[in-house]
Length: 451
Image 1 (cartoon, rainbow, N blue to C red):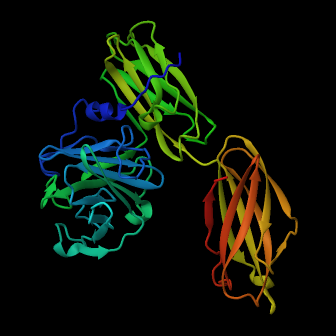
Image 2: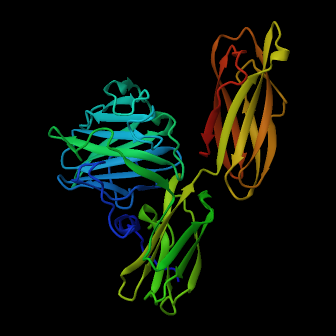
Image 3: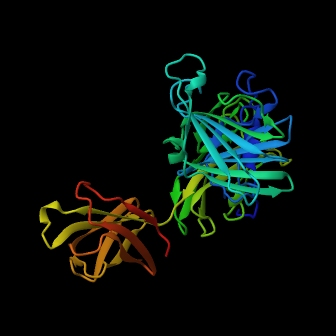
């Protein structure tokens, strides 16, 4: 039975009871005033806009000496952190990228962000710590570095000031943002001259990037699997949930609800399934869930959640699983000089347009290529056709360019008009002339589908 039951905040429940008790931080790692809610950072894409909405973030840490809440998430592009407190003067992040101790090796970053008043430009300072083979903390190991690409948004709410951050992999020195990556993390906020939670830059907590989370009693197993971890708008998402009683007594389960979780709750179908009886020892209940991905689910990572409840509507178990919404097509253009065919009056080059198919269907399309004025192109067909037979497959169209050497040096625009079905996708590639003949390949330009 499909019903409009919303699964909004399973993540809060899982964080609080995933191990039976909230994870308490050892005094040696973070001051006792801090409570780590989870060491598993869930995959989910928040909106970085200075506004924290219900179901958008997953809780990471709270501080008991001040009203401070810290959130953390990740997706294939970024690591995300948000802070919310009455007063925030600056925020601090420490990363031990190899999870081998902050004061060991040269993979450690200490980032401070200040000047956080609305309307001002945030000031980002970063230091790299290199132990230089020292076994203990080396005060000379810190050196200033420049990090680019970090997005900072500030805002306010009824719960206080909000700071949201998006840190791409490139800004974190190639941090491997992918499932099962282990790393050390410390997050803190400074207000009125004090840091909360207290601690030095190296007091990191070991964390893991995860795509699934479950909370179950000891006598039970729960498996929530996304069968299509990558989906496009209009495509059907398929998932499977399995409950199993591995104990000796009945589990008083009455029903379960499965559907979109967090911000996806109102954008995906939810199902309520009644159980015929309590879960008996060794009994296994399996259910397949499917939902069409609507255009409102924008590109990024979202979650499906499941809750098992008793007749009194009390939760017995819960699970979360992430999936990624992607654009149906990705277009990549690159060029390379044709060194064997350079002449006195002209330069020859090759241009390649790749169309990558993220959908689960066969794709037929057409391409119109418009080179700059005075440039000649081969083949001379005004329109070229292509077919891509299946998901994660691509078609590559090659063009040969004949460029007059009398052209003024500079950047030139190459326009491709790709038609797939009823949609047209403009693809623009900027190509420098004269061509760097020392480079085997020119820089690539990648564009996701925006009809």
